[in-house]
Each structure stands twice: as C-alpha cells, then as structure tokens.
Length: 66
Image (cartoon, rainbow, N blue to C red; front, side, top):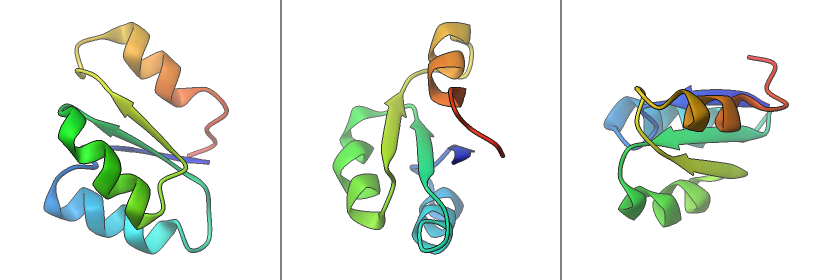
C-alpha cells in the first residue's frame, strides 16, 4: 500500500488515479468532501485528518510500504 498525503489536490488526485492501477492506495485528505471522489479514483482507504494530528497520520500509515 502507498500512502499519499494531500490526495484531495490536483497532483494528489492524479497520483491516486495512476498508482491505484498497480498498487493499493491510502489517501490522506484534510476535507471529508474529497472522500467519495478519491474512492472513485481507486483509493482503497481514505483517511480524513490534519497533518498536525499524529494519531490520524499513524492510522493512515498502518500497513503502508511507501
């Protein structure tokens, strides 16, 4: 699994779309409204949180290799 921060932005969405074709993706976003879009682009897991929240970051990074 690959962990992508900022997945709700233009570059993040592009990475999710491309990388989900070859690897499972965990997308980390700040706004909940990005959840359904990222799932639709192929993200297996979407974590909504703030980069300053260590608990949210740890949750997203479980079972991640990159």
